[in-house]
Amino acid sequence: MAEPTPPVEEVAQQPSRNQGWQPKLVALDIDGTLLKWVDGAGATHEEIAEPVRAAVHRAVDAGAHVVLSSGRSPHGMTRIADLLGLPRSGEDRLWVVASNGAVVFRYPPFELAMEETFDPRAAVEAVLEHHPKALVAVEDRAQRGYRLNRHFPDGELSGQMTITSVEEMVAEPVSRVIIRDPESTADDFVATTTKLGLHGTDYVVGWTAWLDLTPVGVSKASGLEYVAKQLGLTAADSLAIGDGRNDLEMLRWAGRGVAMGQAVQEVIDAADATTLGVDEDGAATELSRWFPGP
Image (cartoon, rainbow, N blue to C red; front, side):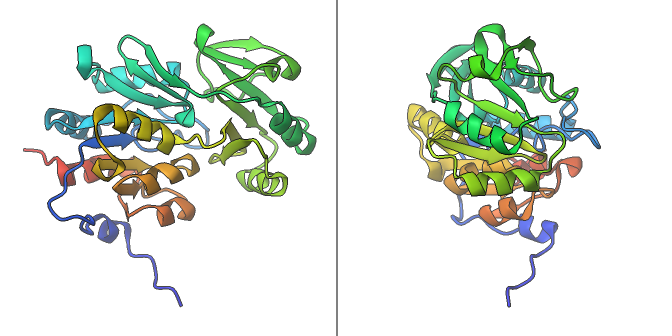
């Protein structure tokens, strides 16, 4: 019989795998890690708790490279960097891994470093056979928003929204596709993706019936690997904190991967440790282990 999972506080106090280690790269998820969820909605509050903000700044002041790593589109991440007060100048500008690793850029100002694209047609058509009423969106960096077949629930997407047919959206390579079915559940989408296989793309199911399609082999981990190489660092130098299924590869990749307390069991199992939940500023708790406050 498997041993019971220890309480969050106990897991959070376990030592790192390397004594004397301190992260040189800190990868931070946004929604559910830096930002708290709005009850009953698929959106987060656009504010960062002061303990979290202070802990992030201590990491930067100690010389660590903080990298925002999210499924969000690029335009949805720059304002979080602004909220954190992280923008620097010159070579100290922030590295950002967006779109679940498909887009990597520097900020400010926005400077694209890398983008991976794929042909989404077959995968989108396959999912829509099982969820014909689903909402579909693709990122539109030029317009700082999305092209979508119908509007998503309030608060789930941001930026300029352009109504477009699905046929037009999948007619050319894209970096990321979102498929959302408000009439289904996350478990429904897990079952659909398991059944279909979705050859030619990678995918991740969110907290709700939300499916992100990305190029094969692309994840937050691949984006962070690219950033680490530019900085002369490796996964072993890295701390990653996240809470969603799109954080699985990132948590396994990092020298220390930490799941937020509210994460689903699959994410907790992939991590080296678990911190407190986002409502208890768990990211600050973990960062303070390595970058203690006064």
